[in-house]
Amino acid sequence: VGALSPCTVSANRSTQIKTYSWDNAQVLLVGNKCDMEDERVVAAERGRQLSEQLGFEYFEASAKDNINVKQTFERLVDIICERMTESLDNNDPTITGAKQGPQLTEQPQRSHQDCAC
Image (tube, rainbow, N blue to C red):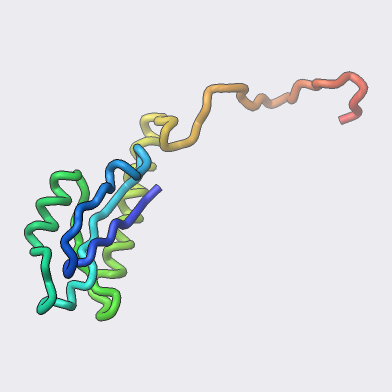
């Protein structure tokens, strides 16, 4: 699971990203509307500090001017793939969705004797 958490650089408000995200969610903090430098309220350095505190990577982007949009999504996909590879290597059930339960066998066991299958 991945999420982009956009925050407008022209608005200064707190976020509750960690509170509302899944335990295994991969999140990037994105300072959006970086094309609006004259209206900037949140400094790039503050965005980097916040992302560091939260343990996320930080990008500044502008959908309007197509700045870092593709790179942001590509990085999120890379992070998700890296995490999935790690979890598959470690057999991590929180990522793989693996559950302890009946395993498939080569010969299925018949549950009904009257069944011709």
